[in-house]
Structures are given as structure tokens and as C-alpha cells.
Image (cartoon, rainbow, N blue to C red; front, side, top):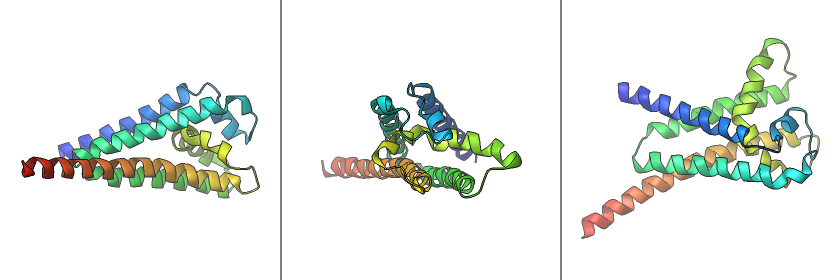
Length: 167
């Protein structure tokens, strides 16, 4: 039980550190463009925002690979819950006007879950429903990076074990 709770804490700390780091290194300040619906206002910073997004997704891929290689089965539950709950909070905020105290939850959730992958916005045209599409794409791409990394690490471990047993 102690090992399981330790893994949960490590996963949460990793998620918070990687999201916070992505925000700190985002020199184009894409988070504020996200909050103010400033689509295309930071056009000259496309490369920096996309670079932050790519590094963020690669970090999740590498972390997932490590978890898959060590066969930490709780990682898939964690990553699914983490991105599922975060996506639900952000989607609820987009679908209904954030009024009252709900805003206290929405802003930090947007920072942690959506802002690091905001660099993907430059691949999509701005329209009336682009917020919904972008939200879903950001959550799915982040979850997929961790899940694909986990499967990759799991398969690498199986391949290594089979190669060692063949010798």
C-alpha cells in the first residue's frame, strides 16, 4: 500500500512539475492568449509555443516509457484519471459560463491541462467551436503521449526479456 501511494505521489509531482515547467519556458506567453481567446495574437511566436508543446508531449512519452518498462500498471489508471478529470473540468467550463466560485477551479485546471499544449492551436483555424475542438485535441494528445509511452516501454521490456531468454 505504501508503494502504491508513493507511485501516486510521484506521478502527481511529475505532472505538476512538467506542466509548470512548460508554462515557465513559454516565452510567447501562450497561456494568456488561451485565457483571453487571443487566437493568432502571438503569430510571431509560433515556433516557441510549438516547441514547448512538443517538449511537453515528449516528456510524457518518456515518462510513460519508463513506467511501462518498469511495469507500473497503476500509471495507466493515473494518466487516464488525470487527463479525464482535467478534461472534464475544462470542458464543463467551456460549455457553461464559469460563474462564481467555479472559476477558482477552472483557471488552475486550464493552466495544468491545456496551456502546455496550446501550441497546437496554430494547426487549427479559428471558428466558433474551435475552443471545444482544441480542448479535446489537447487532452487526447497529452493522454496519448503517456499511454503510447507506456505501451512502448512495456513492449521494450518484453522484447528485452525474450532476447535474453533466446541466448
